[in-house]
Image 1 (spheres, rainbow, N blue to C red):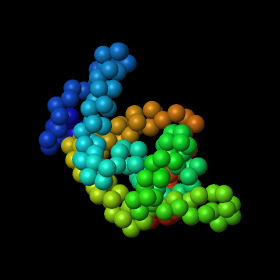
Image 2: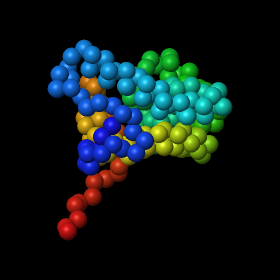
Image 3: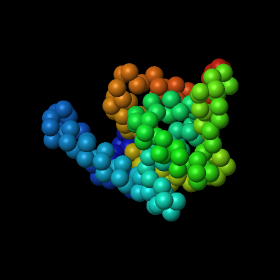
Image 4: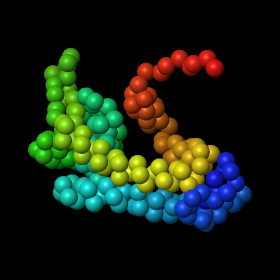
Length: 185
């Protein structure tokens, strides 16, 4: 890849050609899909090894990830984030609770509501899993450059259905904390 900010190949970058002006043709769309498949498989490989040591799978990982992103996450919100059935999530949460990685609490205003949070052990495992992903993604970001990362984010954002975009934005806002006023320079 070429770092768009410098015009030179990124350090250790995979030599990918620039997108054709005919980027909507089947061959180019297939190429992008293949890059997503292979990129995801390579990115998740390190986390998969960690999960295997704990006899957990990718569904457990996704649950840990989103629970870590928002403390006291309601089960109903996690269902929406993961887009899985209640039955599937029930099995995943039962495993995580049994292993002492997640704890549930009753909602403060609605006793039927179940809020999720990581235990110390769960937070440590999620941090180890995140580090495996962060290392891989950060290296790819560095090789591609800021302009390419912005374009990549735009493509991925475009894949999110319009009705789910607010959910993703809210998750990001919650993780970043309250907005601070811009500093004068």
